[in-house]
Amino acid sequence: GIQVEQSPPDLILQEGANSTLRCNFSDSVNNLQWFHQNPWGQLINLFYIPSGTKQNGRLSATTVATERYSLLYISSSQTTDSGVYFCALLSWGKLQFGAGTQVVVTP
Amino acid sequence: DAGITQSPRYKITETGRQVTLMCHQTWSHSYMFWYRQDLGHGLRLIYYSAAADITDKGEVPDGYVVSRSKTENFPLTLESATRSQTSVYFCASSARGGELNQPQHFGDGTRLSIL
Image (cartoon, rainbow over all chains, first blue to last red; front, side, top):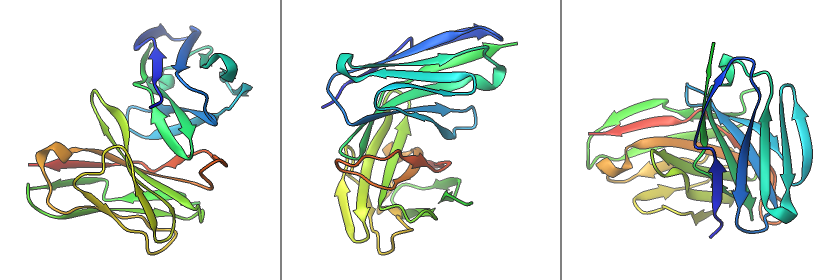
């Protein structure tokens, strides 16, 4: 099956810092989603991004499908950015999740 | 703007009991999904449904039963709960699947503990 690897597994940031999360995948896919799981356990859709770059406020994502990776950028991090970030590959309507990157933003 | 709702949010039950987790979506999405989230395993697909009366197994279907008599509802039943089914369960929906992938939208989850 499709392998999805996320790095780094953990990230500690000081408020205001920028960071990049990476998602590598093993096969060509139809699409890719990024999620944020907040400390209350809710899964929030961030991006649905088959290729190219999208921006949403302080977050942006880039997917290079031909090279099988996607990047999530967090700029000017805030404590509310804490949580786990998942990428998930969409293939024939089914999501295959990576293990996630745990992000802690300290004041 | 209810979106997708799961109930109950929390449930404690005993081994051997039957328990049903409910999922309701207001978008008229064709596809619905059930996932479980466990430490060390991430989120794994249990069952999915492409339309009313059409369901199929995911990665970890054993011990679970689903039905979909109406487009908006997709209940998940544990017929005889076991401790290994203690988990957080997420329901999701999307407008399309197959080749015409669309993003999946998730409910807030049900935290299930089996004693």
